[in-house]
Image (cartoon, rainbow, N blue to C red; front, top):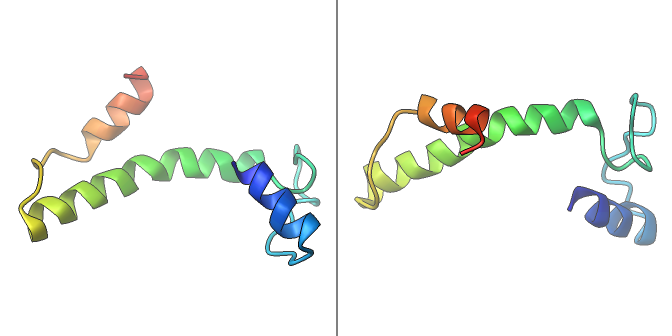
Length: 77
């Protein structure tokens, strides 16, 4: 998705929002493996935070510890 949106926004529209051309392993200057790994590690926290806010502020869903998201990521469940 980042590649498609990057090609459209940065190349087609010429907005130059991001450019990973100087990063090792980049794909057309739009995707950077290092930052992709960072996002993989941050996404479970974002999911947990969203669930926690919904549980705490809006009484939606159930609360569960953050480490469960990371266990699911590691075990690919």
